[in-house]
Length: 113
Image (tube, rainbow, N blue to C red):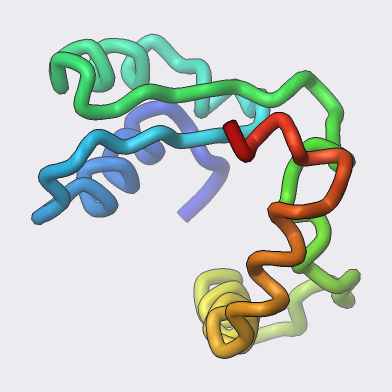
């Protein structure tokens, strides 16, 4: 598949928004694909339905995702990133108490307003 670039991120956003009619606030890291012109144009086309917020350049302490992901070995031959991530997120989704604890952590309290 290659590196994530703006148009691929837009495709991901389209998939996320398919059938989603409410306003969506998305907090992303400062990856260049997240800040690409294609992403900004797509968000503008949605007339406020999608608002994208960018974390500082390196801010794992501000990102609740960083609390949930255990360090892993590099992918082994034949492993797929999407499969590994889906399995990990499915495991986390089974524990709502854990998810709530991420958002209560003092370093991400800014997110609770």
